[in-house]
Image (cartoon, rainbow over all chains, first blue to last red; front, top):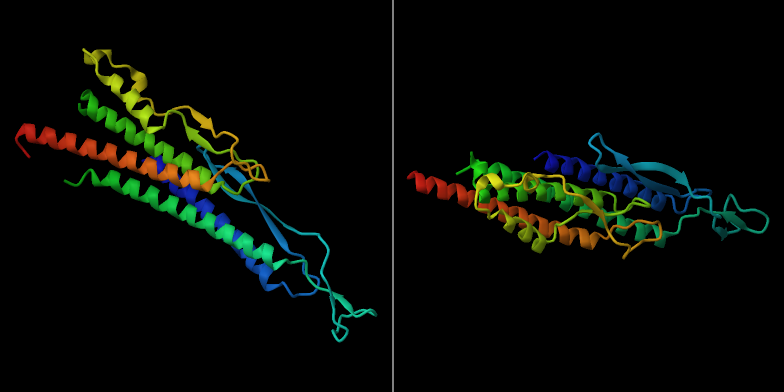
Length: 129
Length: 128
C-alpha cells in the first residue's frame, strides 16, 4: 500500500513538471512576435525523494541564445537603415511539436496516477464482503 | 494465521510485488523526458516467470517453506538500449503503458484469488 501511495506522489511530480513545460511553451508562443524576445527552454532532472524513488523536477529554465529573426519592414518603429528589425527567436513549429509531446507525457502521467489510485482502491475493497 | 495457507500467501506476495512494480513504472513515466534517465523494471516480472516461481510452493511439509518466497524487494534491472532518444533518455512510453496494463491485470488476478480463498474458508466454516 505504501508503494502505491508513493506512486501517486511520483506521478504527481510528473504532472507538475509537464504542466510547467507547457507553461513555458505557451509563453514562447504568445511572445513569438515580440521584438527581441529570447525563447525559454526547460530541462528536467531526477529528484530523489526520501525513500530513494526517482521523482522528476524542473532543473532550470534557460534562455535560448540563438539568432533572432530579421524581419524586413521599413515602416516599423524599430527598423534600422536597411529596414530590418529583430524579432524573436521562436520557431512556431518547434513549439507546437513540443507542446504535443508535453501533452502526451502529461496524459501518460495522468493514466499512471489513475491506475495507482484504482489499485489501492481494489486493496481497500478486500475489506468489503 | 492466513499466511500458513500457501495460496493465500502466494497471492499476497504477488499483490505486494505488483504494487512495487507499479511504483517503478510510474517513476519511468514521470522521468520520460529527463535526459540520461534509464528505464527500470523489476526482475522476474514476466507473467510466465511469476507462475514458475510460485509453483515451487508445493512442498510436503509446510515447515520447509523458504523465506525468500515472501521477500518483496526483487532486484531491479535496467532496460536494454533499444530506444534511446537524442538526450540519452531510455524510456519508451508505449512500453511503459503496456507494462502498466499487464501489471494491473496481475494485481487484479491475485486479489481475486485472495478473495475467493477467503470465501472458501468462510464457506468451509459454514458462514458463507
